[in-house]
Length: 110
Length: 116
Image 1 (cartoon, each protein chain N blue to C red):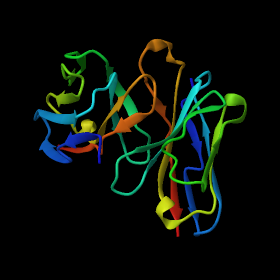
Image 2 (cartoon, rainbow over the protein chains, first blue to last red):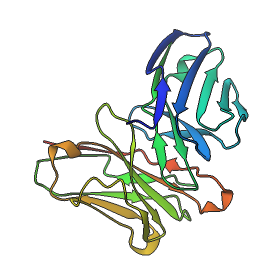
Image 3 (cartoon, rainbow over the protein chains, first blue to last red):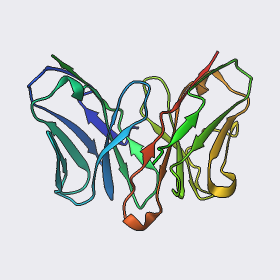
Image 4 (cartoon, one colour):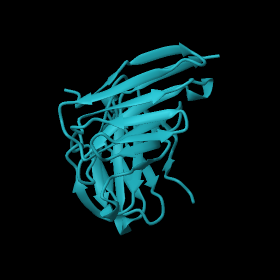
């Protein structure tokens, strides 16, 4: 049973469009991380959210942590081809190991 | 500052052989983690070192896998004997001590293991 469900699994959009990807769980996490991974590389940390309801912005990316700290979303505004990649969410508790979602593979076409 | 490095980047071995993967964490990071992604599945936790001690090895699949971190610096993950289902990408990650209150892990590029 997968602890973190990410949706959609695949997303292909045109440059300039907006998109939202979701990360849902039945478990509460003390923190949740979003990573982006490109082929042949390891996941690269984008953001960490720790407070229920927290919103963080990173240029065109907006991350939100659910009030109950069970879910999160990533919204990208005016997507660019450079945003193409695999987006992973991962939840952790008390500095222990992280549980990953399967990822959303995003393709942004020029 | 150098990131997490892993060696080798790729390894192709035959079933029954032994392979040793190495991870060098970011200097000064006490926490070191091993993860694995097999084809089509999510990244899964294998184990967690704090310095040289195994904090949590609940994700290790079986006793063919042995991880060490002598001296609390680099770590090795040995698979002996390798089986077909061990194929996948093995990631190492490190994080500082827990004083920040939450867990930010920095990943290496991974070792792609193929068992034929």
